[in-house]
Length: 500
Image 1 (spheres, helix red, strand yellow):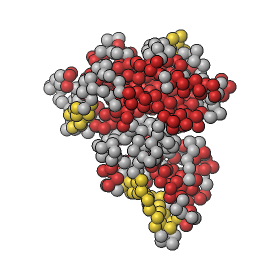
Image 2: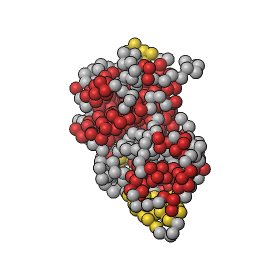
Image 3: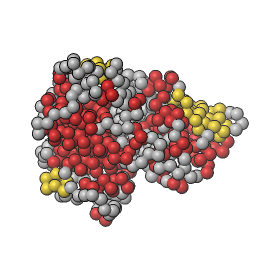
């Protein structure tokens, strides 16, 4: 790995193209490096994971709407839509839009946390749709996804967006563009321009994850994927992009992030080096914001130590800066304590999540978020007794560069009415690669079977699982087999008239 220094240069100092971060990203995307066996197997896991949560969300409002939009953009030799008959094809950018929304809706797929946040699995729908439309092979797709993960993970390590209230999809646009470039075997110059254009068009604010969180949280990554596809198409036709997009005098860094005196350190593999960043990422066992995963496990364990939850006086959670300020009381969002809040808001409230997990001793992607569940009086009492605190020890653990020491947990202190204190801490979720029971292929398959139960026919379920685990053997033009069909009668519609 090489750590690249990234800073702003005045316009009068013409920074050579080959010294720009976008070029360095393009170089590794076009280097045709050998694929790592473990990385390939993890891609398969994540395609299964994405399919699990996408099928489970097919009849949720945002997914229905995105599908209706995509259905208006049919194309003879295009890409498939989750749930829809695979013989029907659609423009790849609209397939990416619909499938990406389905993957993101439940907030239940993979994650990587460092200087910023990310859900690298958001790269996959866009790459699959482009691969299908361009008749690529399974190996082509694997190469593209591995590159996309590499780029996003390393941008997340080096450049913090949330500090400036910029949404994390700003790292997703460049990673999708790089992944597509790698998959289509585009030259370095083309990928360089596409990365810049994709970043330029995917800057948005974190209001999408603040206050009364709306359905846009599910659409945002899909939108980034769609914009990245359009960016690649544009530059393949010979068009350029704002440059240098990272280092320029009026660039993203200069005007939106740390400013003209900024210095970022972004690690990237050497040209030709094997890409393995996907192995540093982790999926979710529970449908909730990743920083709540270890705390759900902890709540389930603490429940066994408390005989009567009515005796709880207060609960203090000592955790990292990120957890406290994003999903804790440090966010200063009254909606995070509101029983009438949206599902999107509740899955970003560690107070609500911990209260429900403590009371139920379990977590369910639907039942844990119902209106009746959120309004249960005993839950509200525990919920409103919870306060989070930043603990610098946990903040240091969160930012530890050593994957084996990096932690996303907390210490919980429960004070009972009689003054007794019960405390316990946990560093990572049980399902984390360094947790007590890391997710393996069997866990991904079990998650798929659980989430698609009563939605998929067994024959279709078995077919998909067999195909995806043999993706390396899929020849050019056969990637539509990765789609999953649902009986038409099981797909809900939104017949409100739009523009399309």
